[in-house]
Length: 207
Image (cartoon, rainbow, N blue to C red; front, side, top):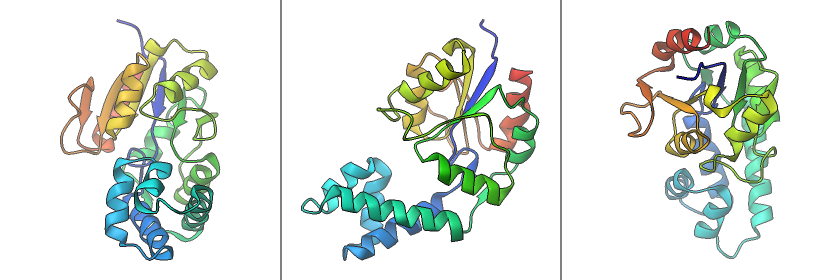
């Protein structure tokens, strides 16, 4: 079996609890268009933003929709209340900075802002929404991370919580563990109910 040499982390839902933040942002966005926040958020959970806009405000300018969403998300980074999952800070601080990376569908400046506010250490590499032409569930984000690290995909361990991220990591040819969900993804290699429970096993896999 190939030795694990790198760990690639998703961010929202994996290292940081951002569910309430995402819900508040989408409710605020929906209010600007006179829409029901709960219905819009339910749609946003299943689709990418551009697809959400097309479904709930088909006649609106998607660029304007996205600009408003980004403004609300940036404001949330500055003023929102959120926290890292238990064990995240200790786990990341104990990993060599050049042996792990973040692979997120968010944008790097928001991730950095959240990490600064919650005291999480940053790695040397962040693959964000602006880094790739295709997002999860495409394997491109995780393959891009491996390429920039100089890693064989088979040497990479992916830590995820969402089905789209699991599929992205698996299709990239990587080992995938899931955390922070009550039930395991059927195709993930290993599952832990919480990040805290996974932390010692992640450190041991890399060590």
